[in-house]
Length: 309
Image (cartoon, rainbow, N blue to C red):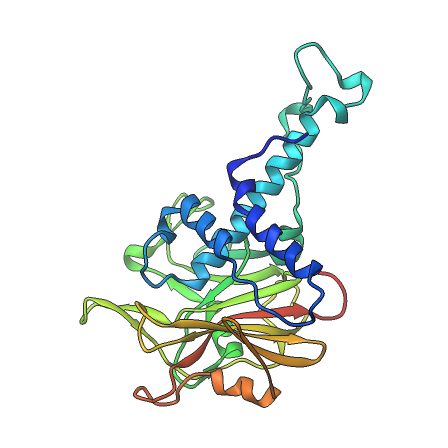
């Protein structure tokens, strides 16, 4: 039997709620995840207060905890005597040979397979033209937003070229000195599920606090990624939106829009209603700063079309 890790216990209440839902004879009903919320608060002190919590930080917390659980369970299964072949069972426990000091590939979980993509940070020295590339993984993209813009324009800004000069010069290994350079971020490997976080909460120095940006940002039902390394468009379809309801960062409410069986549903706590696809557009944001509309798209979920990533 596998050992119980603290992070594993976190999801027991959630698994219990899912089991309750699947065993219900009624076609409709409401189940409050109180036990899961209590466990989250116990596990992470950030969520213990009654302050307004950020949905993006909560999403990252859940995904990282899931990865941690799956990796630990995989390691435990590999080191368990029951799972070892007779040739690998030794007196002092399992051996993990490493060839030429090279570690084995990290364990890939279903979280990685679905949500993880790879970014390439390219820096080009303007003196010798040498390009230095550094890869990094991501589970979501956080995009700066502007008034009356779109996801496509936000992605272009994300991958726009930036010049490094003055105090921000780049140390070129070939030139062995600080040089002016140009850098940009491109998507090397698009994920199967593309999660886009719109940075609607910005710290305003003049105000000395965070402010919610109610900017109108159009997110299309079908999205083409053009800022990829291969320069081949990757097509995505929108299937869920987390909406922040409220005028400020320290208070408000979250609702979700989910596409299921070609129908859009609005989830607001225990209330679920079917909405027209055109209604999704009302959550783009406000074209004017002072508007009565405070329901704005905050986290977008896109699924890649046409095969695996």
